[in-house]
Amino acid sequence: MENIVNAINAIDAAVWGWPMILLLLGTHIIMTGCTGGIQRKIGTAIRLSVTKDPEAEGEVSQFGALATALASTIGTGNIIGVGTAIYLGGPGAVLWCWLTGVFGIATKYAESLIAVKYRVKTPDGRMQGGAMYALERGLNMRWLGLIFAFFAAFASFGIGCATQVNAIATVCTANLGIPAWVVGGAVAVFTALVIFGGIKSIASVCEKLVPFMAFFYVVGCVAILVINADFLLPALRTIVTLAFQPGAAAGGLVGGGIMLALHYGVARGLFSNESGMGSAPIAAAAAQTRNPVRQALVSSTGTFWDTVVVCAMTGLVLVTSIMKNPNIDVSAVDNGGTLTTLAFDQIPYIGPMILVFGIILFAYSTVLGWAYYGERCVEYCFGKAALIPYRVLYVAVAAIAPVVALDLVWTIADILNALMAIPNLIAVLLLAPVIIRETKKYINNLDAHSDEEVPVWSRSKK
Image 1 (cartoon, helix red, strand yellow):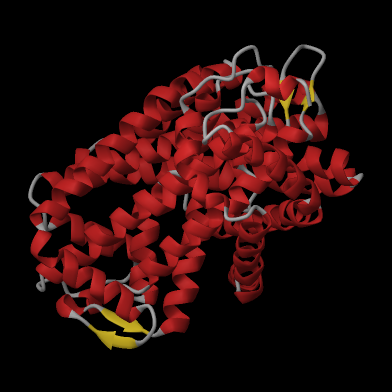
Image 2 (cartoon, one colour):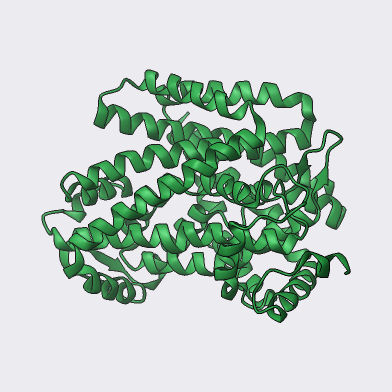
């Protein structure tokens, strides 16, 4: 068994090594160039996310699709993952994590654009799309689409369900005294009530849950930053300085230089915002929209909120808290989760509450979002008849997750996420001419109307 574990860990280290990081980061930069710096339209994209496209085909509103994607994207990685980046790469990792999000907006835009452009309408009126349909219909590579769907379906049980429910159970048991098996049963019941209703039910819950949990967490972070205000500027200077050179700062913070900060900051940023993995575009394809660029703009805001806002605030909270409370012995910390817990515990009442409820809400929303991703991929591989068995198995995994050891599950899920990303990035890069053409046509019209939405009559004549 030990040999198997070592082999899986070696595979994980290989697939998430420098080649994968450079591939993802390189795609972010290439897509930024291909789209003419689509990040400059983030304000317009945010406005479009709460503006309906009248009479458009789709199963859920554009905001509903965005909320479903955000539900799966904003997870424990935003809290514990940032702590892991700081623990392994130093405070400078926060800057690289943030920059990864800024450039990742372009990749999230590009993958969502082709997901909507090549989506299909099923005989019963449902809209389906994602990397598998872009590969099949845009590149005539159904075999690669099947590979993507296969890896994504299996990943949903690990990173989307088991690990998230286990995190909920751990927090509830440690802080609220609730037995793990009770937590697993409760999460399984609530998950079943939502996912058996399909995308409309999932989106309806996510539309309400995501804004609440994000607002709750951001307000809490702002409160902590106000308490730590005297260390805010020193923390910013420390983050920027230690992103490029080794050194030490107040509170025992140590940076290992640009290579360590870059590696762990970029890796955790990519893992957090999922730009390039191909997961979020599956939800985008269900949106009510007539123009793939419009929905792509809306979807790109997911990376903005996830990494540019939430992860950045988490990083500042951790660094300022550690600098303000030098009694935190960073050298004695054994992982990023412990570092995050210690940092939040330094703030009486507010800190622990934010950490506990933040993890519970973020993890549960991820369970719902990934359930939809897994459904679409299972249906692509095996047909609609496979949906009920998949949902039953998903709920069963949620029920037993709190009482099983999940270290190996995390590692396998990491590997599957990387294997998902490769076919998706192939689709994005090979369909770059389509992305460029569609973007120019829509953005030129958008600019001509002073960043107002292109009128319906104008689009219909093209």
